[in-house]
Each structure stands twice: as structure tokens, then as C-alpha cells.
Length: 434
Image 1 (cartoon, rainbow, N blue to C red):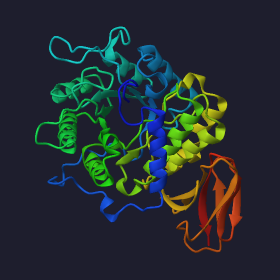
Image 2 (tube, helix red, strand yellow):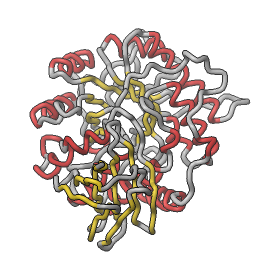
Image 3 (cartoon, helix red, strand yellow):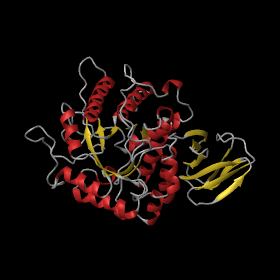
Image 4 (cartoon, helix red, strand yellow):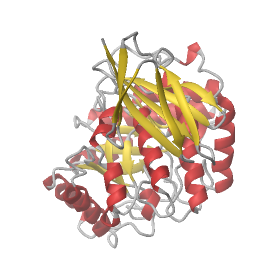
């Protein structure tokens, strides 16, 4: 993620509120047919980046909770150990990513990136080895511009040597941001970003190492109009495995209201991008804040459930050593994780909306449907949907399992959740009985 002092998408509460408002207005419209995934102009059939993420990535990133000031080797390793100790790693949270500000302000004598010796006294190769010893994967951050968002050296003009260096360190995942991107004369901003992310993608492939590539380009075009935004998403899906679509999620230092507005806003914009995602190429609405201060149980559960419905990457950004039993149970709910990680790889769609209440459905590989009933408003309400409207086949009856409470009920026709509290989501897995 970017440095908080840098002006960019989602960095202020005002920006978060604006995203929420704009996205809410857009929910009533369906994505245009032209938004279906397609190859970048001139792309060869074999030019797409390798599919290294058949299911959405899961793991931990330091940014939202620690930013630059709290980042160091000990923090990363402590959270990695917490992933293993808590059982979250066993449930799929295996990629540990070091975000911005890990490096020294200047490159080395040979032009190479150098780890900040105060923050990472043993270097990044050592960090990678320690993570691999725990059975985890090593993720790192860079920027395709001249500088990262935190004003550290970017990979601009250094894509090949930087990629080789990352491979030598055992890096398994690269998140490439898009701050400080020069736009050459005669090019559009979109063309400049496309060219640089293409260079980064090719450099990673040339290493021969299987490095998952997280592209941040679309986040810089969220307000450029859907035609441009969707175009950037389409070529991002050719160049990498997942992409940040828009506003950054709120920071640990944000107010409780700002955190919820951020979760709600990022859900609303990302939910409208379902037709641009495809299995192995994932929309990324940013980090899970489950466990952060200021969020209630219903709000934490809503983020987890909605992210699972959207087949979003499940990347925690909090202090895992301080997780409450409640937060750990939400992050570790195997049945909710299974919805996110379903091999069919479909992002759920909004099929019904009534003000702040909405229903999403997501087909699962075994023929079940995941159905989420989300109350984004400030008062309790009842939400329901018929089996037909939810995409279920005709059947004598249906079995609906609440994936949070574990309760199972049968219904003839209507899936209903009564008195859903404010900011809460009820998530069902429904199967027909013949």
C-alpha cells in the first residue's frame, strides 16, 4: 500500500465516503456486456501471465495495521508465527507480504535494491528462508514508478534486475504499486501504466520462478470513467494474477466509522466488477480488517462473508498475535473460507437490492448456491429471496445452512433471514432436495 502522506485513492475519509456514495449509486446498474474479460489488444494467445492462483490468495500483509513506522523483521516474523500457531496457516493463510518501506532510501553500489538495515538487519533472503521454514510463502512490495508511494526506490528502469533479485531471495508473491509513474510525451496515463506493468510482468516470467503477481494499476483509474477503468482491469488480468481495483482499505489509526465506511465502500465498488473477474484472475478489494479495534462482531463477520462471496483474496492486515477468540473464529471459519476458495472460481453477483439491503448469490462447484443477505443500514431488517431468483433449480424443498451459526433449516421456496442487525450479513449455503 501507499504511504499515508502521499495523495492517492482512498487515503482520506473524504475519499472513502466518496467511493461509498459513487458505488452505491452504481449498484442499480448491471455491468455492460463489453465488460466481459478479454485479451489486451495485440496479445498473443499464450501471452497471459501463468495462472498461479487457481483460488484466491490468502495470507497477511503488514500495511493497514503497521504502515511504515511499525514495520520490521520482528513484526513480520511474529505475525508469521501467529499464523502457524493459530491454525490460520493450515486453513490457507500462507502468504506473508512485506509492504512499502522495507528498503533503504538508496540503491546499492551496483544499482541493486537494499533492505533497510535497521528494519531488516538479516536481509530479505533471510526473511524468505525463515518464512519458508514455517511452510509459508514470501511476498514483497515494489512500485513500477520511479519511487514507491513512501518515496523509496521504484523498479522503473530496473525491472529485470529487481525481478532476478526477488527470485534469488525466494520471493513467491510481488505486489507492484503504481505511485510516481512518469507519463511520456505523446502517451496517455493508461498507456504509460500498461507499458510499465507489461515490463514488470515479463521480467517476473523471465526469472523462471513462480511468482504470483498482484497488479495495482486499476486502483489509479477508479475515477477515470468505467470505459478506461475496465480496460485497465482487462489488461491487468493478462499481466498478473490479481489486481487492486480501487480505494485502499482504512488504516488501523482510522476511526471505527471510517473503517466501516471503508469496508462498505470497497465492497460496493468491487461487487460491480464481478463480470471482469474470471477463475484464476481475481478482483482484490483490499485487506481484511477482522480483529482491528473499533469494529463490531457483525461488521467483522460482514467483511469476511462479503469478501468470500466476491471470491476476493483473503489477506489479513492486523496484529495476529492479539486476535480475540471472536476474530480468530471469523477468520478461521472453514465453511466461509470454502465459499471463497470454491474451485468454480465465480465471483458472486448482486441479484436483489432494496436500499441498504442486498442479496448476493454465488454458484459453487457441487451445485450448491451461496447466498448472502447483507443489511448495510442502521436498523435491523428482514431480507429474503426466492429460490428461483437466487438461481437455484426447481426442487421439492431446499436445505439452507447458516455458515456462521451452523444451523440448518428446510424451506419450500423462500430463503429468508429475519431481523438482521445493522451492518450484519447472513451467509447461507443452499442445496436443493429432490
